[in-house]
Length: 226
Image (cartoon, rainbow, N blue to C red):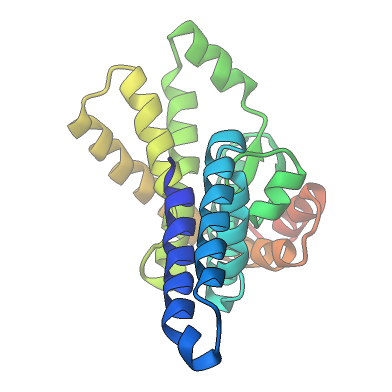
């Protein structure tokens, strides 16, 4: 069972336990919390094995979305990916800022910036990738973490980005220590790009908050000096 389902089960059990404790005070039958717990556990299991955890991801993301800081972090994180990809000439096909938006667009997980990465995929399939393409994508993958660090002085997201980078590097034969060095190097590269184009980044954040199209987001970047 994946981590999303486990988190959902933990939250459900907490609320069901709380209702069981408060039940006598509210004249609530003890069978009601038990049935509710059984039902939610069944739903979580179905979601994990049949829906690959998408339902739980959407639910947990919906709960987190009530936090203004959480929403702010997401848009700044994804704007980091977007701007860096734009500057490094990686084609952008779309973006989402929530798991629900991602699900509607057929994207996995909690969404994010989607790239037209056919060139990367074909090179990875052939088992040989150019250093230039690898460096560009590694910088883009680390750009969300770099953006969060610049804006909030810490980072809460980016685990999937790091896993993607490490997975690609490991498949190419990089050692664990080399992967860590590459993460640090490209995080610094992304940070430098964002700092050098900060006014464009701020304009992009504003556009993405308004759910502007990819073309309009790129126009917002171009209006600011790079």
